[in-house]
Image 1 (cartoon, rainbow, N blue to C red):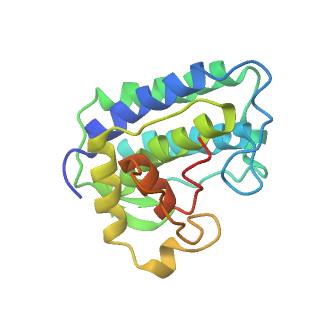
Image 2 (tube, rainbow, N blue to C red):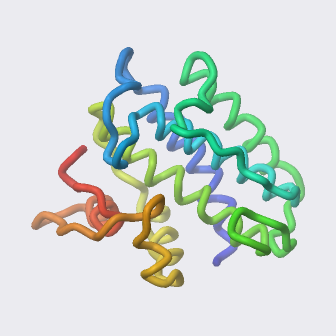
Length: 193
């Protein structure tokens, strides 16, 4: 995993926040491309992952809280709740970060660099999900797509294609954008947005 994980993560916080701020009133209960989740569930999941990411960067032991459905993690106004999750994550990026520090993460012992990769990817992929659920077309930046593709090239298919991660890949339309190709790989209907 390259050292650009911090840049991808920092830019991802801004990317996701711009989508959250663009959600129209009353759209939080709309279904998302993630089976069984609403737009608010996507927000709850990403907010939890963002909080975990900030703790991983600090080298803290992480024991994720389980909210079922993920929307139950969201307290009060969704956009304000997101800001409450993102602000500590942004602050930790301004601290000295040892990307090689080995910490306990939800996926076992790994370096901060490795542990932060999934929360970084979530910001973009679930940003697309949130946009698709709420009627906003989203294109993921090329550098984030390259990062995410490189991340999943190293993960065995059986770990990727399982409940809670990705469903079976779907076909991309002719002339698909890089974002549509990535989301089709992740099992989302690229025409949903």
